[in-house]
Amino acid sequence: MRAIDYERHNAEVKAVWEAYRKGTPARVPMVLGINARYTMFGHEANPREVTFERYFNDPEAMLTRQLEHQGWVRRHVPQDAEMGPPEKGWNVHVDFQNTYEAAWFGCEVRYFDGEVPDTVPLLQDDRRKRALFDRGLPDPFAGGRMRKNWEFYDFFRQKQAEGFTWEGRPILNVTPTGLGTDGPLTVACNVRGASEFYADMAGDPAYAREMLGFITDGIIARIRAYRERLGLPLRTPGYGFADDAIQSISTGMYRDLVMPFHRRLIEAFSEGAPNSIHLCGDATRHFRPLRDELNIRSFDTGFPVDFGWVRGQVGPGVEVKGGPSVMFLQAASPGQVREEVRRILASGITEGGRFTLREGNNLPPGVPIENLWAMYETAKEYGKY
Image (cartoon, rainbow, N blue to C red; front, side, top):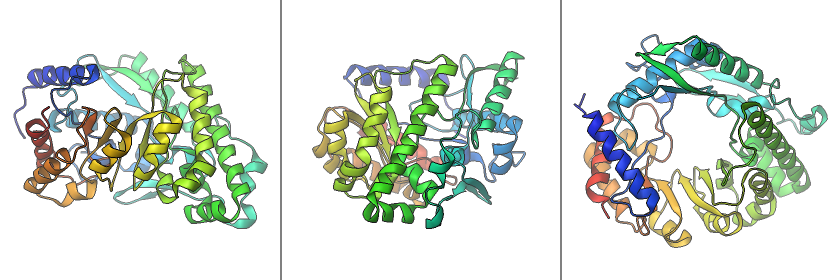
């Protein structure tokens, strides 16, 4: 374990982000996408060996597992985020990983040893592919997995009200799942089956549009209902969402079949300021139409990404987040990580000062902490403007 001066680190991080947001960055910031998966399997931060099945079904286990994870990350993982014990308290959230939307529409959640849970497609049988339409949209609060979402949320809030503390600090914020979306196409692939729905898009586009419209209706209704219950604004200056499944279709098919539903999400929740999107996979060919037609000005990427090409496509004023692939970070040596980060920083992606270095995308178990230090130290050395 490295000795870290948290106070000094946090002061530097504050200055880095202030300069970045003003448009005068001193260096490239670095963040990491880390959730409880990273410390779930055989990790010292999970001394009770909580499984994902228990985590998904026991609110107390979810709460304490999140806090164990956060405490470990804040003490060990280098990035441009606050480190050390939180100044004001802990932020906790209901976390059903990427199962929550498909499970809301009725898909079964399955659990696996040493891996995150996943859902089983509901409509793979062509004879049943209209079953969701016949059933109607699920209730935002009681449909599928969302009943448990709000039960867990209420449990967390009750612990907060009772004065629960962890390492001497209270719960500061509690958030349910379901305020965002993994995207209409991704959810359609989850509920119908990816192969089946991509075939529908090519062979039965009328059904594909109907399914995407149905899912988009549900997403909008759920997010509106949650924002109303939580007293949040129904619209925000800009809106951010994801839809990883567009990596598997052409830009022509995207414009024709999917973009109209992305536009509906933006019109429902954005007041017109620049919007953002997360896209894992080989999706960079879509970036320019997303920029031009949906006012996307921030792209959170996965892999593979040609960063120099991307900067040429979107221009210097568009934010791009990305970096070494997660498989590379798992297998490489610190020296190899250092060279890969140097290569990315020299690609042209830093032109305009709108690049944030991160893993591509979502840090998996088994990434050595020394590889993260190599990534961070290289960003600080070679990411200067």
